Image (cartoon, rainbow, N blue to C red; front, side, top):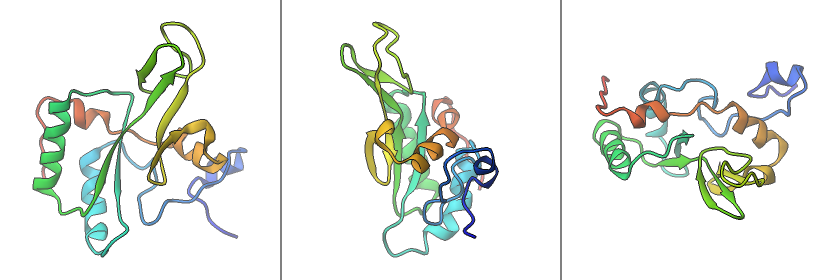
Length: 154
């Protein structure tokens, strides 16, 4: 038997998926600083092929907030590589929409929802069933990014 990352959900009929590489499970925490503190000791041991994903979810923070976040991460952690990944939707009529919006709030049309999977921004409905289940369970780090003052206590 192979243990999957979402054992309990599989028992209820969900598609199985595996934790990607040596990452924490995607549902482990929505506390970005806890996540980074737990990932850092392992991630810095790799000589390549490592990435820490920071999921933004529904938020569309200002560029200066993202710049501050990146600076804080780089000043306080030794992570070799990390990504900042928003979830967004594309309406064929109205274009870019922030966050996961299956239907356009302006015209009501069905949209394509995008996020990062295995290094690429792709429409979620084109992912395999395991990755789609992982997407549903992802904890987002919006709170850490939208706070005006970012405090990091190591």
